[in-house]
Image (tube, rainbow, N blue to C red; front, side, top):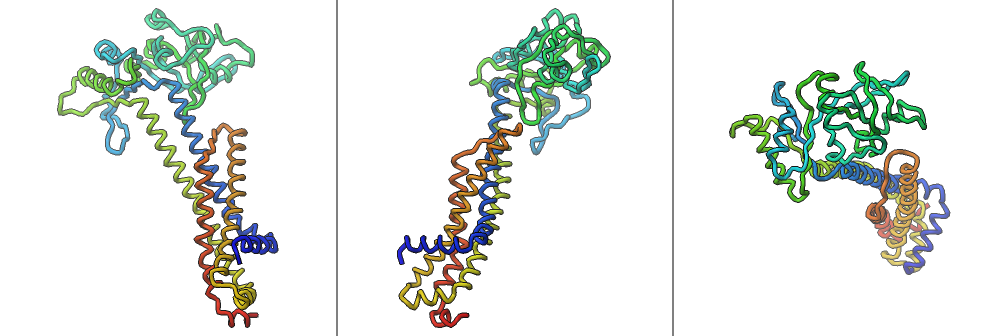
Length: 405
């Protein structure tokens, strides 16, 4: 019996038991579909976060209070650790590779307009926030240096805030909103940036840092400092410079650890990418378990098939079928089950991925690599788990097989 006849016989056997064949393939179908869908979700999330962070600029350094300790967790060295506005000014004056620096103080609170309110992030910062963070005002303008100096109550709001406080078509410019029982005039609306991980970049209100410190929060320190590096190829040099300036500003001795942390935007993007890859791997590993379970199902049903067709095996051997012919026939049946299940699983996985991408906020990216790997793995499962039943059939004694009832 040649391979063509074996394949034809295998399909005939599968068609004779359609429901059983479908149920046998179910584990493979679910496993392959799950692998493709989870990898598509992981790749989509990774690309989305990278794009969102890149929109903010890849030449940024973030200075935060506290020292990075063992395990990569940023912790405060002490309650007295604070970043001051003077730190930002020192960096701008004394670091050669720095194009601009902004200090920020953030506060989460309610913002109100007439009978509507919205919980958002208030950011006290400098007028150059848009240039450093790559944010443009699509309506109106940013506050000026004079307004910063005078601690004016003016605000630039994000699109999400505008959507939740104002009716469709209503112009926010010139309207008055209340923050911490203080009236602020809206002078600008930011461009839409979208989601970055779990952070909505459009859900914020920008106010002058002096206004935030003196009138809203009542503090004399800042939450963080953002540094725009003049040359992306000099990021490492800029980190060294900023660290040197900060240590001098904080009067740290050589034996003392930094009481601040400097994060590189490129490092953050790389870390997010690595986290997404690990998550995708874990999800795919769970899906692979379904493939293995499907393989066990194939082995189980093939063993049942060998038992049911024992007499047929005896007849085939009696009329001249060789051991390898019987082995090949049952191995092809097992492989056919897994390959058909793999093909159906690929179609289902691609369909589910596109459906998730179209009806939800999650981005999905189906890669050819995940499809090829899933198909190859499903074929391997068919061969691996079908080999034992096929060998059992091939090793059957002709006399015993012919006598089997």
